[in-house]
Length: 462
Image 1 (cartoon, one colour):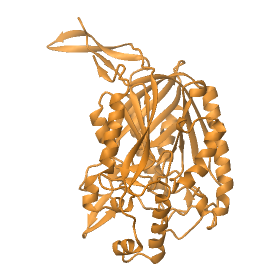
Image 2 (cartoon, one colour; image 1 turned 90 degrees about the horizontal axis):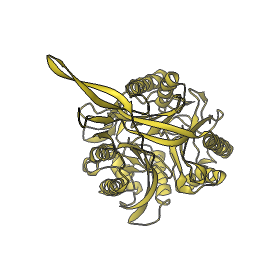
Image 3 (cartoon, rainbow, N blue to C red; image 1 turned 60 degrees about the vertical axis):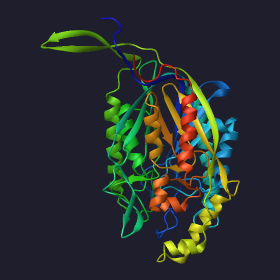
Image 4 (cartoon, rainbow, N blue to C red; image 1 turned 120 degrees about the vertical axis):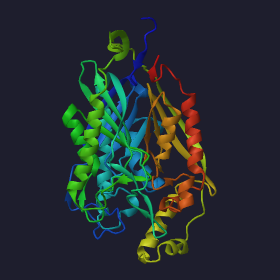
């Protein structure tokens, strides 16, 4: 058979190392992440909190993807307080570190601005220990780095649902049974030359809001059980990356029932194991080798050795995005006339702290980090993009596997809603600093950067 079709599974060949540390704080630390909570501090632990580090590359050019079981950065001062010491400890440039928070809403508060509040006296010592553990894990990952293959695959899980729903003319945050959610995940398996799995990367978009104001225990939410399922299967750390989940959450959430969080996580973990199980053997492609006539002409595909793309690229862009007008107390109270006064004032304090983190009065320079890893591209940014960002990037770049990471390297209490969210006057659209059209500008800029990256072999067939 001449010019037989060949299918190349998406992959990369790179120097990779992985390490993990336990970053669970002591009970008593501040853990008030919900306005409706009646408690201020954590009273115990549901599942340990972890920091997982993936080191990519060699020598002084090593880059690090760090995933921690924490919530979000509330201001530039908060980000500097946590992340800058890690950069200094590693002796790297700021852009060599992607510090990602999985966005659990059952984690400890790490902002220095809450040090004077109940449980806040433990924040500084906890962050010191967090910095030490992450830096140690990064050094270990770099030391252990070896040539590996990263195989990528897409899969699907029905855990996530659209969480923007209207009822009685009011925009609410909860399950919308009339809308279809993006349940796509990306799974990556890092395999060493000896055939052993060194790590699994799981990128999924779904707010970790299973556990809410009723829960007083520290927890990674569903992320913990999802990782456990995968790690039991592959005997290797799973690094979780929260996707573009601004409009997505679990169907069953807002509870203190720990079994619901674990059930949600198991559903995602099992789906990921299923998808990973269907990946071809590392270092192989599939080729149409022959045809067997059996009533119908049957195409016989066989495994064949395949080269893996080894290119790594790192790009940062700062995108000019519009701001909307600053909220006033009257704005907040008019939207929530039944909310307690302290809740309205807290919303204003958060908004003011976030606004002060960015220079500019009508627009801001919004950072985006784009890493090319073989056939995959990682798009990381500080805020909370809607799932439309990952859906559209994957549609426009089918030759690549696209990983979108919310909540990376900066203040993250900022949504990036698309135009239709502004039309619907969703919570995210009026709460965010960003003005109408910002999400579309961001998409166009990221799209242009990805299009300009080396294409290499690409994903698919020839």
